[in-house]
Image (cartoon, rainbow, N blue to C red; front, side, top):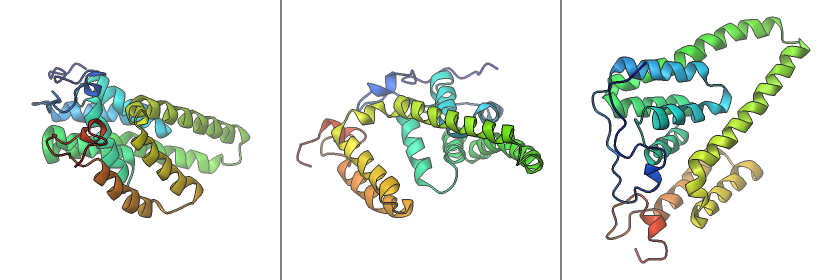
Length: 220
């Protein structure tokens, strides 16, 4: 299906990485609710496991141009910080940005309808075949593929953050607290989150986003 809204300025894959403090990204206007619903319905139907983030990025950033890289990453960060499924949260955020409350509702419906229907059907099928070794082997394979897709999308959308020592330190601290010290994610968010916000706060004379990277070492 072709969409009537052309990609917004700055929505090309690499444009968001070099936009700096004066990003040219603008929210697309006039996106139809039906287009939002069909796009998220398609993503929900073809994405599996943790790889859904890769499908979201490919559709929303690279194909439709509804978000640029920076705004997609920002929306993903908010979605991960909220309770619930990341993909569902992200669909609501993007739908709201495009068409307000109505956009959020249709995006949520499109994103959850395929998965909910398939889980219901597969749940019934799995209950009857739970002890089948071939079924269990298939699930192990799907799990391995999901890990690979998560790793790939992490490198795709996070390579800019991995290039800054301050970002790497925050990532390492988070991994240490969650994976090795087994601290509750809630406490990690309540401790690491405010510290990260303070470190990346807008600098005097700057415009906000990205100032911490460009102004590291400058007096606030």
